Image (spheres, rainbow, N blue to C red):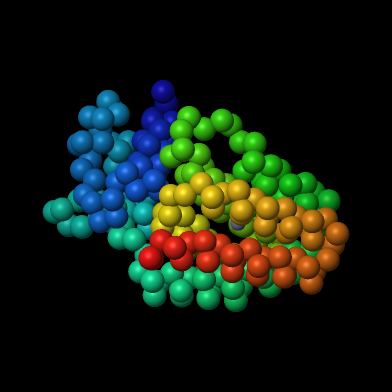
Length: 215
Ligand SMILES: [Zn+2]
């Protein structure tokens, strides 16, 4: 394997364990243990960990090393959803205004990836890949909407990674796919009002689904 693909493989391995909570929030992640587990040197592990650190999924402390980021608090969760509700419905509306046949095709492809992507080996990778595909789909809409300030702000929060880590549950995926279909229908119809409403509905429902994680 080329060094870059070793880093990718290590990243995927740790990412999936974090998303599935196989590595518990707050738990230490010793570099040497991961390196031994995967039979690689410590260099690619360090690189993968610093990528995960930039995404906020792990933290690094002086002399202690890496640990899994703590789970979102209820307050952080509420704040994130308020933030999404302010920005994403408006971006769905803007996306309709700026939609081209090419962008619509890209969106359809991003949505299809979520339903028919490469067959995952198990439930863990199915879930973590879904989280990534969902992030990609939402980012594609923001890209089409064309407001770079909003896009960069949402992107830098890595909203989807943190929300998906809250709950490792397959029901989330099927319902979200249906809501994405409603969004796509509005984009296809060029209906800005319907797109804004469909995004608001999707975010509200997603909030309700994940709220159960705090019970
Ligand atoms: Zn979604």
